[in-house]
Image (cartoon, rainbow, N blue to C red; front, side):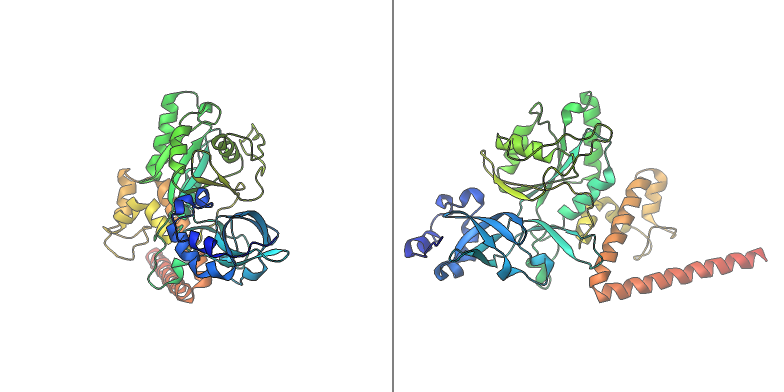
Length: 391
């Protein structure tokens, strides 16, 4: 199918974005400006709504087409076409091809389970990251902290290529959605669960909802109406049921979670971008078993902001909060204002992120090696001193 370029089409890109055929998918004046250099080349703007097997479904002003990604397959896996991307498509020929990716505003990235130190982009150009947590099972606070750290680091991958850019630049706004709230026996228990999450999610909205009863779905619908939102969480967290409820029809396949542990099978196997009838765009994702950090130092610092603030009061600027004298973090543990679980989670995520960064950054790798050697020397000196006292 061929979609020839025309002056009227090119000029329409300069007009009001509100009347553009792609406006329900998030098209605005800024995207029009990004696409402008390609408007006279016979290319069409479009948004990727699904990716699989080297091809993608792209919604364009002339409808949805199936496009090949062969022209934009890079060596860098962070630049692979992803659901949520805005692209320039060549509609001529069979098959049609994606010619270029427009610069991403945000990207939610996790590390892969491979040994190649690669990041995997799960969704791009999102405004809200809805972390779905099922109340049908016991809360895993550490997992929520992990998701939040990644969400708060969801800056534009393109921006991070510029000198001086930080991982917090233009990050998407996280929200914790507590699904299956109808399964909580009483309002007092629900209130305690919400408070538990709020305590580990500074500045993040925590919203209990129920697709079964409709509880607070109107609040969530109002939030996601303002842009593009992605649903993230483990299998069985109720993401697909929530998506179907917001869509007002069964679009995503739903399977029952196991009663024994509340875990579900991978109902959603691809990431799908859908337009909501109340406004906004929703990306549903497969359940995530593993959520490895990727360049999430800024996010970890934001999630554990109270520990970062305490660390500034430590006697030594390089305090590891383990046994150093004058450590304000350990003092907070002693007086009960900071929990051991919280500190352990902070240490775990920080170490994991440092290992990931060290695999790709020689300078960081060298600094970590020096730190390991320093600690090893201190440990040996302590053991030698102890042996001397025992003689």
